[in-house]
Amino acid sequence: MRAVVVVALLLGALGAPAQAQAPGPSSAPAPAEPTPPEGVAPKKVLRYAIRIAETGFDPAQVSDLYSRTITAGIFDAPLRFDYLARPVRLKPATAQALPEISEDFKTLTFRIKPGIYFADDPAFKGRKRELTAADYIYSIKRHYDPANKSSNLYILENALLPGLSELRQEAIKRKKPFDYDREVAALKLLDRYTFQVRTELGDPRFVNNFADAMLGAVAREVVEAYPGKTMEHPVGTGPWRLADWRRSSLIVLEKNPNFRDVFYEETPDPADRRMVEAAARLKGRKLPMVDRVEIAVIEENQPRWLSFLRNEFDLVDDVPQEFMPQVMPKNKLAPNLAKRGMQAVRYARADLYLSYFNMEDPVVGGYTPDKVALRRAIALAVDLDKVIRLPRRGQAIPAQGPVPPGTFGYDPAFRSEMSQHDIGRARALLDLYGYVDKDGDGWRDQPDGSPLVIEYTTEPDGEKRALAELWQKALDAIQVRLKFRFGKWPENLKASNAGKLQMWGVGWSATAPDGDSFLGLGYGPNKGQSNKSRFDLPAYNAIYAKQKRLPNGPERQALMAEAQRLLVAYMPFKAEVHRIYTDMAQPWVIGYDRNIYMRDFWAFVDIDLEQQARARP
Image (tube, rainbow, N blue to C red; front, side, top):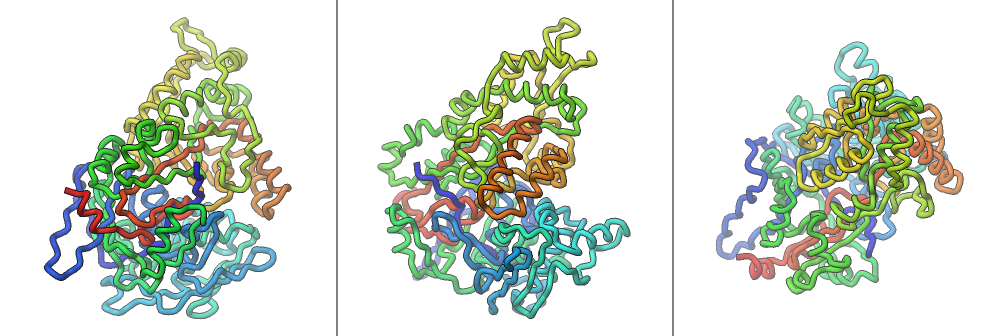
């Protein structure tokens, strides 16, 4: 298996306002392109589908992976990850070079390239609008504006940017609009193209955030021209603009005519012959190479996969796990697909799938021994071997803690109770702390005699239902009632952030090759954001804060291991698996690879129209 440690590509822009249309059927095909006049080259259209509906396209407001991927294709952060470099590395995007970073890691100085322009929009009143350093200062401040309810605010607040949190609290206390014009110590405009960011923390890895679309440049004129509509009206400086949007059905991106000159200069691993040949073929080409990207929303796995096999889509992002035994027997591409020229990219995503307990819930929450025992017993009842072997079809490894492979802090030798399955121990823990059947109905009750009922939230698709069946069997085996609450992913996310779910099964993916964000899932100040369990233990918080300041090395590694042991002991969430993914591209797609720390890839691929025409009816 080739573990590709990155997600794919550079992206970025938008332009004319795209009006949200009434949702169409989730499996509706994208509109066909009209036949071009004679002598005019046909447009290159890249088509694929995502399985979870988008929520919108404002970098300061989106939190889900799928929406963030779209925003990464519209908005430019100052930096990006090198598409094909392994191990991964940062490189400039809109910045002239990597930032100057002070020795204490507290000051970062960015210089932006002149001559970069936003996509055209009526908000600019007919003028070409150049990107400046002030746009990045404004975009950072937007995360602190209470009106935006930024799901990524905790990342910036944890870095301790002086003056910004105070500005936010003042707006909340006085119930007045956030003061964007107030100067703060954290952000300094040095000249038209240069800005400085100062933190009080001194995190050596803080710079990685400037390669994430959450810090993509937003124009103030656009935000003020469309109040309350920034999620549906994105305008950026990258390769793409939003051309059409049918909520929960279809997202269409087209080339941004104002996109700067960027050329394909990617260098793949010499051992990867497929990508070496593709890079040689694409070298020197102006980006993006396709004209249009059409992204359908198809929540069910079977129609999404069958549409790909019928050549209706050019690639499938994450082959559904139930089809993996036929698609990749023994983790090798099936002969019938290889004969068709299909390209498979298998990689270990730096991620975690977990089921969390709401630590503020009266049934499963709390820090007393009986509550800890209940959570640990439930965790011990789950058979991860079956989870991996059955619904996940072998495409995962058991998690010993939250930190995944491919990130600093992961230790392949680390073992813990987190991955253990022991029904006998689970029953003994429940018996010991008074969770016994008091009324003789065959189900355990709480120590005070009230009914013990666990409510687990999940989504209604086939894969989640298969996982739910195993949870049901696990809790049946320890005589604990379990009922399910089914909802759409965006709805569950909103309820989760508000602390309204007792349990939820959810995935978390890395944005940089470091385990800090996974430990942040248990950091108290992150409650309501990344910390879905709302875990808040002073001893854990202290360890987390200390490791965050340290450079990578043995001391930090030891602290990260200690933090994981506390999570195992208190069990605010059951860390289940680190997943393995396979993407598949049609033979006419040139240059597709997976960089798991990049959200977008469309600008780095091309389509062989002749080969595509021969295959499609």
